[in-house]
Image 1 (cartoon, rainbow, N blue to C red):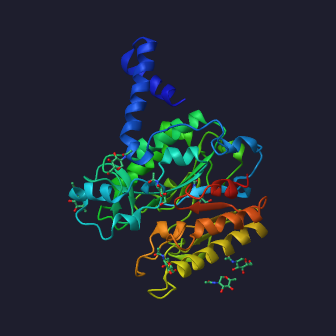
Image 2: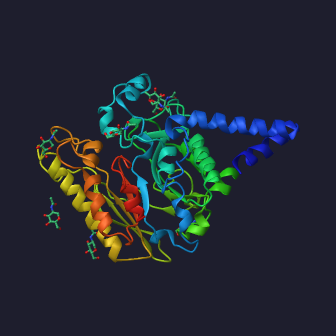
Image 3: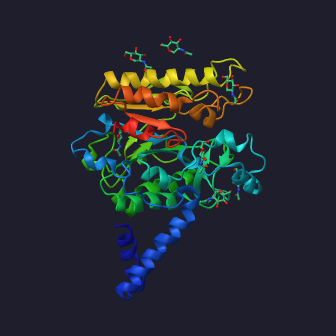
Length: 377
Ligand SMILES: *[C@@H]1O[C@H](CO)[C@@H](O)[C@H](O)[C@H]1NC(C)=O
Ligand SMILES: *[C@@H]1O[C@H](CO)[C@@H](O)[C@H](O)[C@H]1NC(C)=O
Ligand SMILES: *[C@@H]1O[C@H](CO)[C@@H](O)[C@H](O)[C@H]1NC(C)=O
Ligand SMILES: *[C@@H]1O[C@H](CO)[C@@H](O)[C@H](O)[C@H]1NC(C)=O
Ligand SMILES: *[C@@H]1O[C@H](CO)[C@@H](O)[C@H](O)[C@H]1NC(C)=O
Ligand SMILES: *[C@@H]1O[C@H](CO)[C@@H](O)[C@H](O)[C@H]1NC(C)=O
Ligand SMILES: *[C@@H]1O[C@H](CO)[C@@H](O)[C@H](O)[C@H]1NC(C)=O
């Protein structure tokens, strides 16, 4: 479908033979994916024994998305933000506030995440250097100076063309605190990306509701975590809106009514900075606190509000602790004590078959079987 969209563009431009047009369209897609590769990575496909590659094909079309168990990744775009990457970008950013390990939350690419069964992506945009194109950030950290949001959307579209049974949710947040401007031009750029002709084909076009799997297959579903401040409110017309002023910072229990008329509520656990503990509490206690907050929330998802959206973040850090608890230590432990992901695996397995909702993971694939346990495979 994607190269067909470009093909029709090319045929207008060229009036050339169809094999030339096809070649040109394919080359254009390859070029876009290559520019997006610092965020997308490369699509290495799935092994034939993979249970996670096209896992949604086994669920009926009528399944409501809110009743599904959807594995997600927190700060999905940070997978290649190693110290080498941070160092290579200093000419754009100047010194960063923290070492790369504080910002890195994944180490598998977006394509690997898709092939590994991840269906919810947490992405944060702001201007790329130069303030002319939109790119990806985590907090202050610039993740890739030349890959654009546009390029990365094409990556998702092309993957969905290959996996038409799958439905992918994109949560998009504006990353403030990057030192780049927030202005009308930025909002026009993101608005156009979300509403241009290609987007109209690849994003679910309903407003204010999350529908069924059948409606969402082969498409992206939008979770808009930013407000339009310069464009009119009517610019918010796709997916569901989770306004940043209601998404309370670092909070274990958040409730956002995303559709007043039908009283549709999102229940969210996003306690990410374990600041309730004193400095020096150590990895084990920080991990226990986070595990508690996450499982208390998922427990509710198994019992209540079957038709509401539950999002539980299993990801966290405590960078003020000494030594710092990085996202990796919180997720995977420090070598001596287990992390949230190891503790979550048996907890989820014991509750197999229950509704968990969306669970957002750091380093999602390092503990084998965790994605399968989230889905309930
Ligand atoms: C990942 O980062 C390294 C080091 O900065 C870089 O050499 C490599 O090209 C990056 N990978 C991709 C796919 O961009
Ligand atoms: C990802 O992180 C895990 C846990 O630290 C490590 O074992 C693995 O080698 C890393 N993989 C890559 C590709 O960096
Ligand atoms: C981008 O915006 C920042 C903040 O407003 C400004 O300091 C910087 O000079 C701008 N860069 C360019 C290339 O316009
Ligand atoms: C989209 O839905 C929201 C909430 O359900 C509503 O406030 C808004 O007016 C709708 N926007 C459009 C363009 O229909
Ligand atoms: C991991 O953290 C615990 C305290 O929670 C500590 O006793 C242990 O020494 C730490 N292990 C490493 C390898 O740092
Ligand atoms: C974790 O939750 C349990 C049960 O609610 C509670 O008894 C315990 O004190 C909590 N532990 C921490 C470290 O928060
Ligand atoms: C779980 O649900 C109960 C009952 O509605 C509520 O009192 C409690 O705050 C919820 N806990 C979490 C962690 O969402």
